[in-house]
Amino acid sequence: MSEIRICAPSRIYGSYNGGRFSARAMIEYMSKIGFDGVDISLESVDVLDDSYKSVYYSVKTAARARGLEIPSCHLPYYMPDPSDKVLMEGFSKQLKKGIDIAAHIEIPLAVIHPIALHAKSVTAEEWARRNLEFLAPICQHARQRGVKLLIENMASNCEGDGDHLFGSNATEIAALADALGVGCCWDFGHANLSHRGEDEVKLLGDRLSLVHVHDNNGYTDSHLPPFEGSVNWECAMKSLKEMGYRGYLNIEMSAWALSPDEYIREQFGRKTLYLGQRLASMI
Image (cartoon, rainbow, N blue to C red; front, side):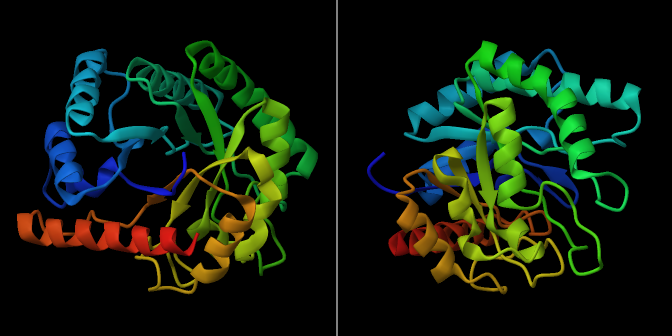
């Protein structure tokens, strides 16, 4: 890939307060706005429904017909209590079904969250052990299906309270990715909440395959548009440039509270694309 390309999550034109748009309508919207690609948000889909094959095949067909790529997807992330074995077994099945969807419509990258545990409750070694135990079978399933998993850095709001959330910095997710034989996704909004410098992404090196872009005030995971929070985007994009990054910028702005009005949604989408292009120009 010779230049930075811009995608947005499918949930940018997914649900709203009072209803939801169809998957086909989402593809039409993404194409009309002019995005290069769409990141499929599997966390908002009932991936246990066996009808997914026909639904997602139609999404792939519609995207290809309009010149849209589907470079990545986000696996379900509403993780249950990690200490509840039954619930975690069910969650594992959801993740594997999400991987099956990715394989079915040839999505090469799938983002997954690690189990997030606090230093007040476990040691670093225990955190790593529990993640390896839970994620290893899922990673094996992804390899068998031809999908590359990416570990995403978590958002922590406890770093200044004498605590630490494991999985919220580059060193930890890089070590976990290496142990599992997978890649990494760096979320600049999550990093800002965790008080990590914008240049920390460089620690990931060639493990980095995808970037999530959104802003916040350093206290709430509000998914604001870039340049409307406290992320230093010049430093962030300079870091990607120094790394030689040539993947997608996935612009994860929050759209759930928007009116379903077509004009309002269109203007929001165009703003999202413009901000992505502005960031890409820095790289």
